[in-house]
Image (cartoon, rainbow, N blue to C red; front, top):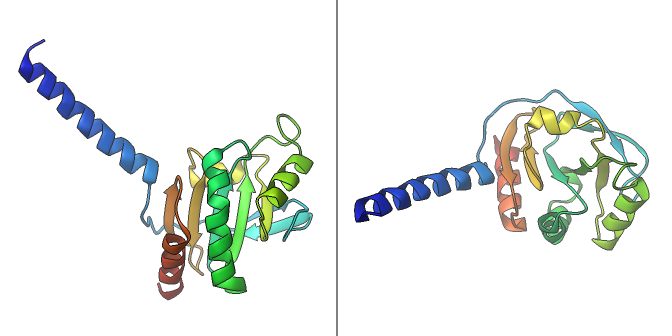
Length: 175
């Protein structure tokens, strides 16, 4: 292999890697709105059986899609807990699993996982994947912040920290 072929190959890999990083992160605001959707909720710490409307018009909403098998989702729980404690009840927090309940995991499994990881806000299930599809979420964890008019002000696939989440929520409050 010639030197210039190696250099061209490495350059191509760098471009692909940069594109993949942007795709994986997905941070930013697309300003699109989402019609509110009723999501089934699960009885767990900070949550009860029923439904919740996501996003809640008139209130900033933090929505996280997760799965119990996802180690990155597991590591995000402490960050979400910190952000939830700091932002209080002024912001709607909802975490939603898009796992097929009753197939590989049960409602009881999700509730136990939630309790084990100290979740203390609304827990939902996207059993029909309607929410996942509306958001075009390609993986978990996937976090979205909506402003009070249901516009997406920030979305992120992968791990983030509480301070970043708090910053984007504060920005959503003022937009």
